[in-house]
Length: 213
Image (cartoon, rainbow, N blue to C red):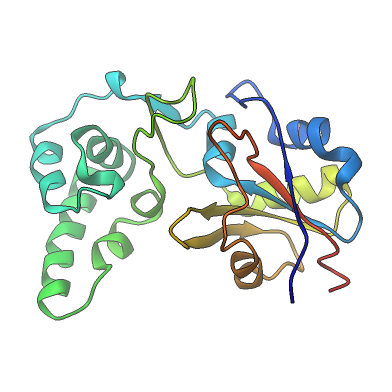
């Protein structure tokens, strides 16, 4: 079934914003009781104060060494983002993940590093250069996305909400949903990436009549 998805334009949201208040400010009149409100995870993280300028990160020898073993297209292929990951998850945990990841690849199993390192290993975003004033920032994954989704649902009086990590490469993952919302279903609906976190300024979108469908 084809769902109607309504992108919601906003200004650039910052650490001084509350995500629920921002959604109501820009999308209140478009949100109905059967709808699911979806928010880009990077914007949720920014409103939680989880963006850090790369100049404030001091890469160590471990970060400078390990980053070279990761594909250049990945977030942690740079000194600063790898160090940010180490700061969040701990040096020992990252080194353990690296060793187990190498062993896993030798056995034909991919993704062991990210499974071992944990949450921020999968979600940390490198400097993108696309979303001023955060174009020089590294952005961590958001804190407690399930609670954020529940808070959005209550604030907006809608059927449900989701915090999603979606890109233009057909990668769609839902990090947290409110009660009654199917995370896999929402991920599938968002697969074409209706969000626009850069010049489009549409970090929020609404899946219309989700409950009825």
